[in-house]
Length: 346
Ligand code: 5GP
Ligand code: MN
Picture (cartoon, rainbow, N blue to C red):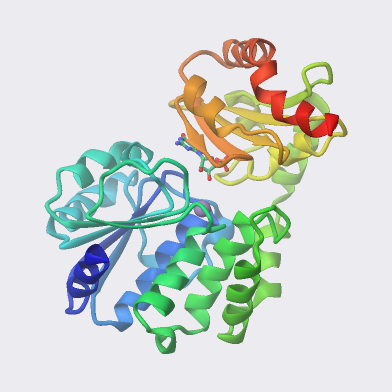
C-alpha cells in the first residue's frame, strides 16, 4: 500500500516520463504504452515512448505512434539516451525482466529515475520501485485500465483514442477473446472501453485482416514447405531461415500468428516457431491448455512467458536448434505431458 501511495505522489505533479516496453512490441506492449502516454499527457506530464526495436506496421494507427522513438534507429538513439537520462519516472510495460529491453537495458538500469513496472508475466524480477503486476490479468492493457480507473480514479480522462489503444492489447493477448485468460473482468473492461469509444470492428480489421500479398504467400509457403509435424511427440513446428524471410520480403510482424497454425493440428499439444534473425534464433512456443511451456522455455531456451505462450532464443544454428528441441521433448515427455495423462485418465 505504501508503494502505491508513493507512486501516486510521484505522478501527482508534472514530471519528465519515459515509457518503454519489450523488444519487438506487440499490440499489448504498444497499446499499453501509448494508452498510458495519452493519459499521462492529459495529467500534464512530458512523456516519451521509446521502444527497443521497431514493431509491425499494423500497429501504426495508434495515437502517438508518430512520436515513438525506436532505440535501434541510429539517427534517434542519442535523443533516446538523453530522454532516458533526463527521465524522473520510467514506466516499464509488458515485461518482467530488463533483458527484454536488449540494447536499451543498461541505460534503464543505470538511470536514477523512479521505475514503475506494469506487467502480467510470471516471475517478475525486482527492478522497479513500484510494481503493478498480476498474472491474473490477460493483458498489460487491462492493468493500465485498472491503474487509471480503480487506483487513480481518473476514468473521466479516458477517451476514444486511449480506449482504442487499450482495446487492441486486450483483444490480441486474449487471442481475440478466445484464450482461457478471457475472464469476466476482461469482458467488463472491454465493454467499458467500447462505451468510451473503442472501435472494435476497425481495430480487429486493422490487426487481423490486413495483409500484404507477400505475407499471404509467405504463410502459404511456410505451411506447405516449412512445417514439421511429429505426431508421436505431439509437436509441430516451423523453422524459418533468413533466406526464407528475404525471399518473401518479410516485414516485422509477418510471422505473427504463424505458430497457431501448427498448434491447430489435431493431436498436437506443443507448437513452436523458430525464426532465424540477425542476432540468433528467436523462438515462439505455444501449447494446449493442460501443457505448460513457460518453464521449458526458461530452462532450455533462455526465455519464459505464459503457461501456453512463451518464447526464447538460441545461439545454435537453425537446424541444431530444432534438433535440440526435438531431443528435449523426447527427454522431457513425462514432465511435459504428465498433467495431460492425468486429465485423460480421469
Ligand atoms: P511471442 O511468441 O508472441 O513472441 O511471445 C509469446 C510470449 O512469450 C510473450 O508474451 C512473452 O511473454 C514471452 N516471451 C517471448 N520471447 C521471450 C523471451 O525472449 N524471454 C522471455 N522471458 N519471454 C519471452
Ligand atoms: Mn502482454
